[in-house]
Image (cartoon, rainbow, N blue to C red):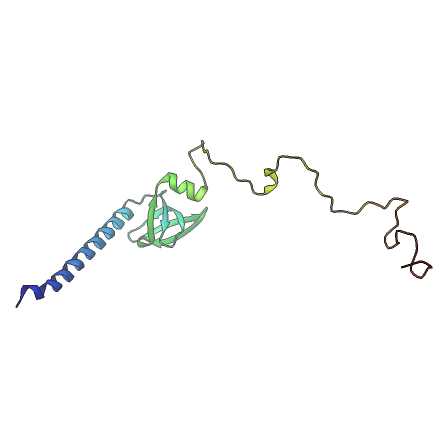
Length: 150
């Protein structure tokens, strides 16, 4: 048998070995992360829900998904253990950095104008003056059917 004919098999076996090795490393890191869980830790589930760990069992974890709302999950459902700062920033919107230099974007455009222009009154129209014709009356004072009406 020629050694060159065995080369494709060796390459396939080598690629398979490298892929399974990296997958095993990822699984070990995930198991180690889940073993570090302690009550009060903020987590993100594989479904994208943020919660706080309340109790830890052998294969299950009780999470508080909202104040007073507890749900039981499998430990495998924990996608990430979050740092306290990151959890507070995402869930509660609390940031420790009080010197934010980014401009504040207003909710509407009314605060972007600096001049104090009066607002339009969309209510009733003013009463017509005495010398102006009212409503349907023509300006020249002639009504339909009269002599000289257009």
